[in-house]
Length: 361
Image (cartoon, rainbow, N blue to C red; front, side, top):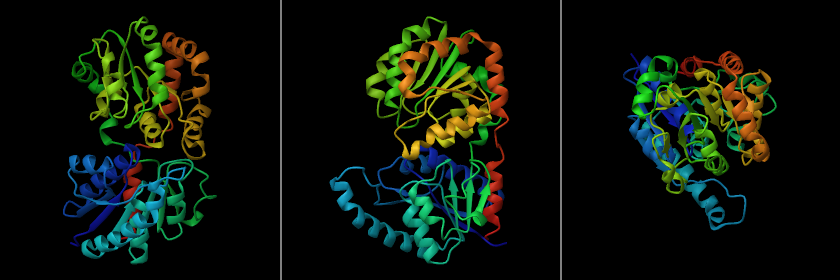
């Protein structure tokens, strides 16, 4: 039997890293003796998270362009040239059968180098609005696995495969984990639990909202798991108390989802895909600071299917407490949102993506 080799690249945020790990895990199930190598950006979170998942990773000296003139930007051409050279060297030494990119700074030079060496490449695009790197890479890619329809205006139509986003397989059956999850966080099983997700780095505006509304939320007999993100943990850890668990990063996503009755979340593509599988009532607060406002588009797709509530940052002051209290009191609305968001889930996304990869072997 042929011993296959795969290189995967995705990083910068959990939304790029976890899809790459999910794809590697599924490939490993199907090809137990395959070899895997991840390539990330030095100093980014993938350099810790990938080894924790049991895979080797090499780091490139690469970072994104800032929106204003900075020393970082002046270094960009040098970093890009160095990363391209290093990517070619990695590919020459490792000799992969297929290279898979899930987004992030490092996947650009790596997939560019792989394409140049004639090695098949697969792009996994999580968002309803692709970033510039994937648009450029799509010209040479063999397959582009997407989570949203109507991406023909960005990518060559004949290469697009609608797969959905890979999600952690431990989220498929969370209902059976509720008791363990409540115990793990030391919470009260008789209270409703609000889960607040600001993403792995955190969301300043969401944190400010929860800080302002904290007493109001607790007064409704609600307890909170509050992921404030690692950038903000020092500012918010003082709110830790019996009914409030403030955390920077969540290792056991299955547990927080199992414990939750209502969820407040940003609308990054991976989070949206996970929340469809989890099937709990969600209030989306999209980040307005991302390219082409794609978080609002991600959330709107769920709202259009009557599967979630959307609150814009600009409406938080006037609307949040009204919307939150109304949802908390309305059991019928909660189950309607749950049912509708579950209909949008694609739990087999990772298997479908791996089938596309196998076609290139």
